[in-house]
Image (cartoon, rainbow, N blue to C red; front, side, top):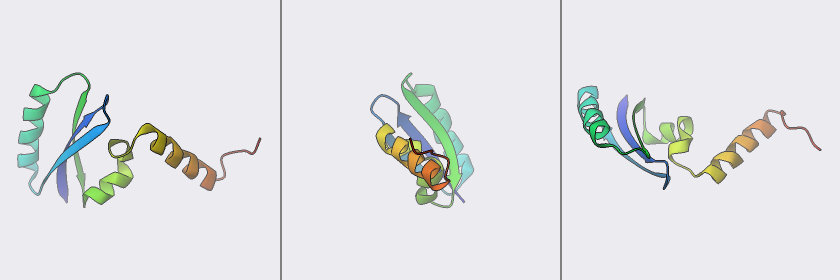
Amino acid sequence: MRFFVMEYNRRTEEAHWTEFGVIGDALALLREKEAKKVAEMEVVLLMGRSIGDLKITHGRYFMGPVEMAQRWQERVAADGLLSAS
Protein backbone atom coordinates (compact mmCIF):
# COMPACT_ATOMS: atom_id res chain seq x y z
CA MET A 1 0.00 0.00 0.00
CA ARG A 2 0.97 3.58 -0.61
CA PHE A 3 0.09 6.60 1.53
CA PHE A 4 -0.94 9.96 0.06
CA VAL A 5 -1.15 13.30 1.84
CA MET A 6 -3.75 15.23 -0.14
CA GLU A 7 -4.14 18.99 -0.06
CA TYR A 8 -7.39 20.19 -1.63
CA ASN A 9 -8.42 23.81 -2.04
CA ARG A 10 -12.22 23.99 -1.94
CA ARG A 11 -12.26 27.47 -3.52
CA THR A 12 -10.02 26.76 -6.52
CA GLU A 13 -10.64 22.97 -6.64
CA GLU A 14 -6.90 22.38 -6.96
CA ALA A 15 -5.45 19.20 -5.51
CA HIS A 16 -1.84 18.36 -4.73
CA TRP A 17 -0.54 15.17 -3.21
CA THR A 18 2.64 13.69 -1.89
CA GLU A 19 3.13 9.93 -2.03
CA PHE A 20 4.86 7.85 0.64
CA GLY A 21 5.75 4.22 1.14
CA VAL A 22 5.97 4.57 4.93
CA ILE A 23 3.03 5.73 7.02
CA GLY A 24 5.22 7.49 9.60
CA ASP A 25 6.57 9.87 6.95
CA ALA A 26 3.05 10.53 5.68
CA LEU A 27 1.78 11.27 9.19
CA ALA A 28 4.64 13.69 9.82
CA LEU A 29 3.78 15.67 6.68
CA LEU A 30 0.06 15.53 7.51
CA ARG A 31 0.68 17.08 10.94
CA GLU A 32 2.88 19.78 9.39
CA LYS A 33 0.28 20.65 6.72
CA GLU A 34 -2.60 20.60 9.22
CA ALA A 35 -0.77 23.11 11.43
CA LYS A 36 -0.39 25.55 8.51
CA LYS A 37 -3.65 25.10 6.62
CA VAL A 38 -6.16 27.86 5.95
CA ALA A 39 -9.96 27.62 6.10
CA GLU A 40 -10.55 26.75 2.44
CA MET A 41 -8.03 23.90 2.52
CA GLU A 42 -8.59 20.23 3.28
CA VAL A 43 -5.62 18.09 4.23
CA VAL A 44 -6.21 14.35 4.38
CA LEU A 45 -4.25 11.13 4.52
CA LEU A 46 -5.41 8.47 2.07
CA MET A 47 -4.18 4.94 1.48
CA GLY A 48 -4.32 2.98 -1.76
CA ARG A 49 -2.37 0.91 -4.22
CA SER A 50 -1.93 3.90 -6.54
CA ILE A 51 -3.08 7.42 -7.26
CA GLY A 52 -5.25 5.87 -9.99
CA ASP A 53 -7.17 3.93 -7.33
CA LEU A 54 -7.71 7.13 -5.36
CA LYS A 55 -9.09 8.86 -8.45
CA ILE A 56 -11.82 6.21 -8.44
CA THR A 57 -12.53 6.12 -4.71
CA HIS A 58 -11.99 9.82 -3.92
CA GLY A 59 -12.91 11.47 -7.22
CA ARG A 60 -13.92 14.78 -5.68
CA TYR A 61 -10.27 15.63 -5.17
CA PHE A 62 -9.51 15.14 -8.86
CA MET A 63 -12.48 16.58 -10.80
CA GLY A 64 -14.67 19.64 -10.71
CA PRO A 65 -18.31 19.73 -9.61
CA VAL A 66 -19.74 19.47 -13.13
CA GLU A 67 -17.70 16.37 -13.90
CA MET A 68 -18.61 14.85 -10.52
CA ALA A 69 -22.33 15.47 -11.11
CA GLN A 70 -22.05 13.95 -14.56
CA ARG A 71 -20.30 10.88 -13.21
CA TRP A 72 -22.94 10.37 -10.50
CA GLN A 73 -25.75 10.78 -13.02
CA GLU A 74 -24.13 8.14 -15.25
CA ARG A 75 -23.81 5.74 -12.31
CA VAL A 76 -27.41 6.24 -11.23
CA ALA A 77 -28.63 5.80 -14.82
CA ALA A 78 -26.56 2.62 -15.20
CA ASP A 79 -28.17 1.24 -12.06
CA GLY A 80 -31.62 2.00 -13.49
CA LEU A 81 -32.49 4.45 -10.72
CA LEU A 82 -33.37 7.40 -12.96
CA SER A 83 -36.90 7.51 -14.28
CA ALA A 84 -37.70 8.96 -17.68
CA SER A 85 -39.92 12.03 -17.43
